[in-house]
Image 1 (tube, rainbow, N blue to C red):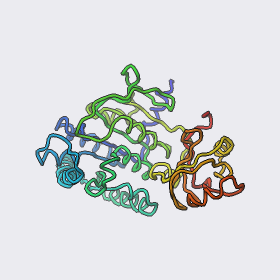
Image 2: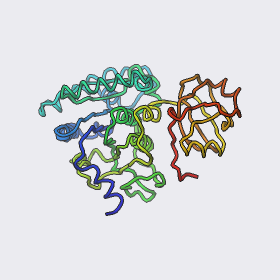
Image 3: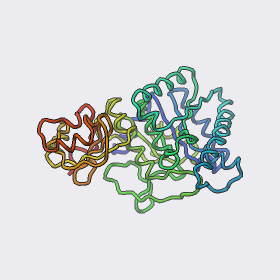
Image 4: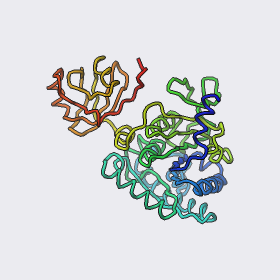
Length: 356
């Protein structure tokens, strides 16, 4: 059996939590897609816990306001989101009602997942919705999360939710059949060394793109699950994916399974500083050691003890973790032996052992 078939076989027969993300362009392209999506998700809910991460609030709001183009002003985007949220949830309520499924809205900001205590509370909220037999419909709270409108997208949110819930599968539905290579051919299995050609439509409806989906899919696999990027226009796409059929682009874990805490560090946190390290420290990290001040060559940014930091070696990202001390103290103690700057329990390596 070849590698793609072997990896896709793990999708068959497994039970657990599925996170499905649908983008604005998928929803607004054809009205009947929403009814079809509801039917497919209802079928999945007979066997798995399912979460729907949905874009579309701003797009819905623009439609209600009679605007053809996505506005530039933040206040207009916030207004469109506030108006569109109600319309979006009403559409989902009506779509799932024939299947006897209740939908529950979950609005999140990045801060809700970046703070460890709030991250855990979010998991508890999902457990309550699952226990009630409801389908959680997740969206960024764009009305108040200004940074999320300007810089974030729901692909990243879906990856964070998948990591928080230890999902076995994340499906990112796009308006193309998957990740394409340089010849425009769909890539069945995406490995870290796969060369891809990022192209496809971008317009004023959505804020994401294929690069974001690839990043999100790779992040979501940190807990040991898999991710698939596929076309939301294909009828029966979700059922085909969970049957292990060669649909879309499959992304599989490339490293060891992370604990809940380390997955949170890896996926949910935005670094506030950068630590550059030498070759010796890089080798020590590969061996599972903590990052010591002796191996740090430069410090960028201002951060406090407990803040997330990115670790780089020769310009390559090699890890992310929580600093044991602030930036000012790190600078003072550069070169000192035995001084732990990022403890191994708070550190996630982002390169494989066979990396250069």
